[in-house]
Length: 284
Image 1: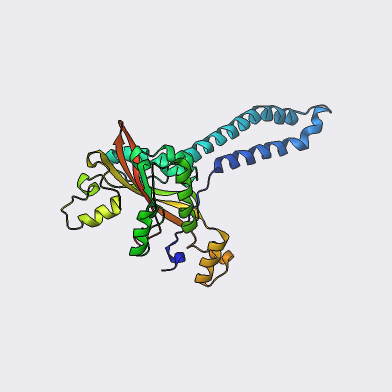
Image 2 (image 1 turned 135 degrees about the vertical axis):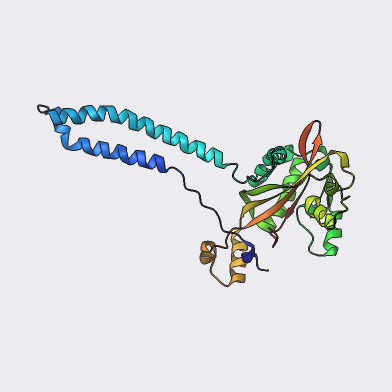
C-alpha cells in the first residue's frame, strides 16, 4: 500500500485569541487619545480631561491584561504538551504513561543522548538491528539479529537511530502514546487466550526471554511525527502521481512511525527495557 494512504491529517491548534483581543482594545484606546493630544498644550476642556483620566485608568489595566493573556497562553501551550498522552487511560495506567513519556519525548525531539540515559541496564545490554529496522523478509530477520551490539554506548544508540530516520524521516514531535497491556501473561508470552500470541506480539515483539519475567510491568505503543527528506518526499509524490507541493497540502500528508516500549521495574523505578521502531500500519 502506498505510503501516502497511510499518512494522517494533522491537527491544528489555535492559541492566543484573548491576547489579540486585549491588544486590539489597547490600540483602540491609544487611537482615541490622538485627536485630543493638543489639549495638553491648549486649555483642557472637560471632555479632554475625561479622556485623559479614562486613559490613565484603562492603560495600566489593559497592559496588565495583556501580560495575563500572554501568561494564560503560555500555560495553555505548556498544558498542551501532554496532549499526545492517552486521555482515556485507566487510573492505574497513568504511572506507565508518565514513566515512558521522557524517553518518548526525547526520541521525538531527536535528543538521542537523553533517550539513552533513560534506558534500563537490560536495554543497554544488547540491541539488534531489527529493533530499529524491521525485517521485510525472513532472511533479513536473521541478518538483523546477527547485527547486534552488546553493552551499547550512547554513540552506538545514536548511530542505530540513523536507520530509523532513513526509513521514516527525522522525528519531529510526539503524536500519541497509550498503554497496550499490563497483563503479566501477555508480557511473558504465557497467555492462554484465543489471541494471546498475537497480543504478545503486539505488546513485546521480539523482546528477549532473558529479560526477567517478574520485573516486566507494561507495554506501550505510540506514534511520532516525522519530517521526510527531500528525496523521500519526491519518491512518495511520484508514487502518488502529484507534485511535492500538492502532496504536502493534501490531507493525507502526515508521516510518522510507531514506537513500541516495554517497561520494567529496576531499582524501584520504571525504566525502558525494550523498544522497537515500526512503520505505519493499517491497524494504527
